[in-house]
Image 1 (cartoon, rainbow, N blue to C red):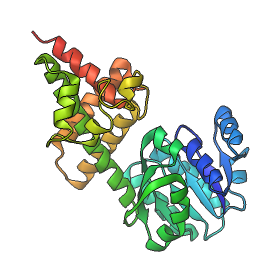
Image 2 (cartoon, one colour; image 1 turned 180 degrees about the horizontal axis):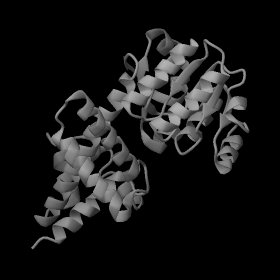
Image 3 (cartoon, rainbow, N blue to C red; image 1 turned 90 degrees about the horizontal axis):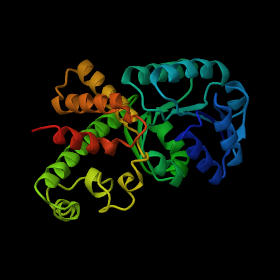
Image 4 (cartoon, rainbow, N blue to C red; image 1 turned 60 degrees about the vertical axis):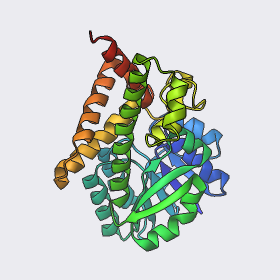
Length: 296
């Protein structure tokens, strides 16, 4: 299989490399020359343009920052590929843009999937990502070997944009739960409770959640969590804010009430304003701790 891959950043680069490891020929393009060089070192054919990257391919994958970038690239994409080319977008974007991308593909006669991921840069490198996929059943079936080369869990969520819907709902849960876990540890500190004691209780009790047991925001209990590496992401605070904003946009459009999601977005906006956009999102515990220290 020959695959065109557009967007070779922190997520896209490792994903493209895993496709190469699985035996696919990958033609990659990115506006960043250093990222192109990194991809070339991992077996990706570095191309000078999008048109070159998608020439003669069976499938095209995009991994881009936002909906406006996806629509701009897909406009050029559908003008460059023949009908029947499978188009997959793995970016996390707004629902409206995802639907427009599917419409562009359909107009060209190309099957398409929205397939955002969960698992962060570690999962991208290890090939253990979770894919949440929206689109037609046949397109999903055809793409299964591609997803299996890059991920561990591949879930078909429904029709066009269902993958994006699942991603933003999931990450709203994640943002809310990380704040809750951080608040619990800060309260525990105030009450004289050790981090390990709180972890040992909550991790086997009703407070158990991924933000605690896998991504614990304090050093010690979970050695692989970013808290043990100076909150190096992982999943950056800026990306969490982006996803929470997408969830709020979707909630407003759909008429859903999400008060905790709205508060989480507000807190992560402050976290980013304080200069933490490049830190792991679990580092929000430091902001919560500082806010507690400021109280009489």
